[in-house]
Amino acid sequence: MPHGLMPLLRLCQWLQLTPVSVAIRESTWVFPILDAVHCVGIILVAGTIVIVDLRLLGLGMRRQPVSSVIAQVLPWTFFGVAFMFVTGSLLAWAEPVKLYRSPFFRWKLLFLAIAGLNALLFHYTTFSPARARVAAAVSIVSWISVIAAGRAIGYELSR
Image (cartoon, rainbow, N blue to C red; front, side, top):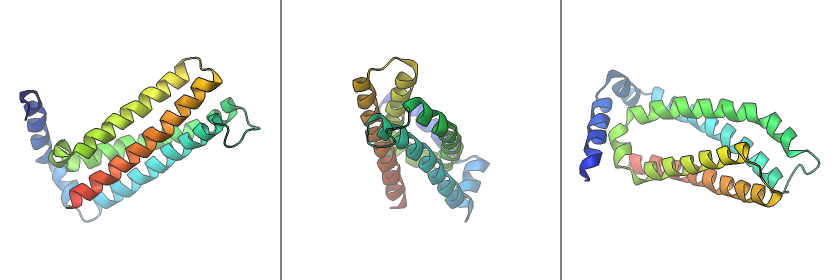
């Protein structure tokens, strides 16, 4: 293990021993409820983003201006992001050492970063229709990858 990662591992080991971590991990209901609510957040985020992406790709709602579609779904996207952040943080707090060792968790974080950077670039720069379609395609691939890596974490941790 690279020496630079040791402090992070120690932090994960400490977090795993905290009362909150133990309570979430050992509860019959808390972890599965958090996981279910996390999935609702994913559905809200990925679902609303894919609606916009499909519109940008010209594959749906072609009579609606892109700005109108974005205005309608963005509040739901932000609501989903809040759900995902809170529940994902608590789920990570429950099993930090396993996640530290999980390559799928690192992939998920990478794909989340790509999706977030792509969204920031899309919302804060001027795009030609061709660049908007590329941003939409990158978004769809990024979110599919986030979901796939997240599911792989669940399968990996259950072994």
